[in-house]
Length: 259
Image (cartoon, rainbow, N blue to C red; front, top):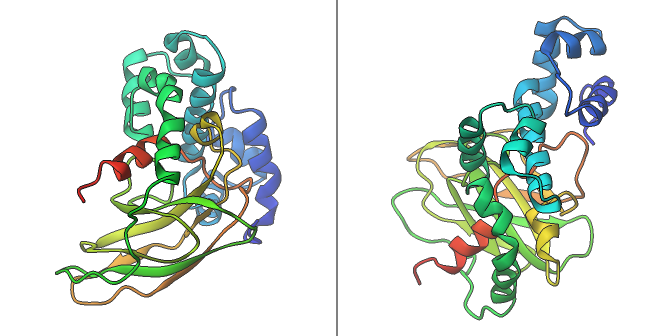
């Protein structure tokens, strides 16, 4: 866990423990003993997200959990996380997870097959530099713990793995990687992992997968090379936002990529 503003640790635990309850900015800032303005500023510096964005992402994660672990109707799940409108819930879920709630609930039927196909895939992209008009992002990914499996790495436009990454790839092992042809913009590098043999529910609800995220943005300019990235997978931390994008969807897109 980062040492930045360690006094927020208790507050972050409080949010996790009371995620089904109303959590207003005024309430949270009082709990942290700061003004709302100062609390919002230091919270965003610590997590990279506003308190409201962090809370909404945790509630969508709870919705994912309920979809796969309970028979509750989708409307009841939406109400459980504070969404009174089923249409609004479905739209937000789809935007941030990559599929509708009903499709996500059914995704356990094919997620195992996606991982099995990846485990038996013979042709993987090489990490070599690809020549394009736009710069390539290269780097090396390590792990704090022994790991064998697939690594999903991508560039997102927000400091949270939600919605489809703007650019990304899958890696068969730790080591060098290359994401080619990155158009100018501001991006956040994030990755997670799925061990070979992991069951579908474990990576459809990736609470415990090794991960990494760079809170500082990567600025890509047309005529400048992107600095090499050296990142390490680590166990999830209390201040990490949830991985909302469906890992099964990213596997499927990778398997269906043009050869």
